[in-house]
Amino acid sequence: MMVATHTFSVVWLLFLFATMRYSVQMFQQNSYRVERYNRWLRSSGEWHSRANMLSVIGAAALTMVPHWGMMLGLGAWMLIIAIAEFSIRYKIPIAYTMRVKRLMATRYIVTFAIVALVHIYAPQYTLMAMMLLCVGYWTILANLINKPMEAAITRWYYNDAKRILRSMPHLTIIGITGSFGKTSTKHFLHRVLSERYNVLMTPGNFNTTLGVVRTVREHLKPHHEVFIVEMGAKQRGDIKEICDLVCPHMGIVTSVGEMHLETFGSVENVARTKFELIDALPAGGFGIVNIDSEAAFEYIKANGIKVTTYAIDNCEADYRATDIAYSSQRTTFSVDSADYATHLLGRGNILNITAALAVAEKMGVSVEARRRGVKQLEQVEHRLSMRTSGGITILDDAYNSNPTGARMALEVLSGFETAGAKYVVTPGFVEMGAKQYDNNRTFGTDIAASKADGVIVVNEVNRAAITSGLEAGGYDMARVSTVASFKEAMAELQPRLKAGDVVLYENDLPDSFK
Image (cartoon, rainbow, N blue to C red; front, side, top):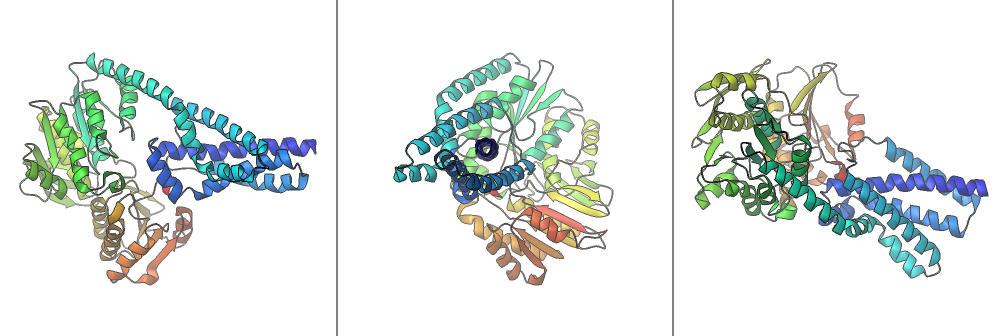
């Protein structure tokens, strides 16, 4: 019995770490925001709550009724789950920052305290039931305990980043924000400006205040001449908070769309938040806005905002990409009477390049240098990037999460010259509030118009809306598959694929919505 008890204890600790790590990972992916984590917990975290409940029951059973048969069965089940959890490769793995390490340590203490209370007060079944029902909120409790300490640490880091920026008065700071297109624009601008300047950009998805603080403290050096700051937002004031830190001299608004409507409430609030960047520019600062984004164009006109504009379709733009032509080798286009060539696909990429070219011209980068930079642009992973394997072409637009970008990706798929079949794999759009169903239904209609040879709809969240749109668009529903996960989607798709086929991965869900 002693060996069984010790073995069960080891398995339980392993299981506890695996499930706790996932909870903290989701809290991190939801930007440490309690309200967003709560939404995930209610919509996608039920299995996680059940898993944690099992860990409490297991621990209580171990201490109260040490029966070797029960421990063997329960331990084997928990071991399988723990091994499965450790073997999963998440699209956005947990980043073991110091904050995460502190949160996990506190979460351990909270968990063991609750387990002890369950054991001590087990006869009081009402109390034990309440503890078990609250199990999914232990990470929130740990975060609440750590909150005063985290606030003090964050304040110190923020002030240190501010000090570093003040010590570099000649640094040109360019902010980029938008509902979509900001990451690609950041990469393109970095490449083109690097033809003349020593440039630093915020890496990856470091587009929050803390991400910018970390970039400044760890990467910004005295030799840098330009700092490109991607600015993300989930609610009003997020962009202003970053601007108060970095004090940008230039700003690009790539779009205003219907993303994160659950937190913004309306497109008008999205526009106000994105234009916090333009509001923060000093007198004589350079602001440029994409007016192919209808909401952005309307906001400019309604508020009388004076900015430089860019577009592909809108003829009123100061910088407009024209004469766009695709070939198997490259895409050619013109901006402001200068001709350019790139290996990148799609109107979305051309639009983002146009913003970069406008800023580069403003900063004195020559036409020849701009051409050289555009020619050397590389695909940004998961943003309508293309790769080929075994004769099969993958159009990877997995990080896209908006209707406009999806429409552009479908346009590329539709115009793709191939003798093979074309497939779309998608879970649709999320975090769109009341407009989510309608947008996903329209998306289904757009897929039908693209004449894809097969469609795989992943996850149940938007299944009804997308299939309804496909049906309304006259699509042959016999060519539509519905699956629960990307693993099932791949199992469905792989046997069909042959050389010459093209697969579009569109609107990939993050791990928090699997």
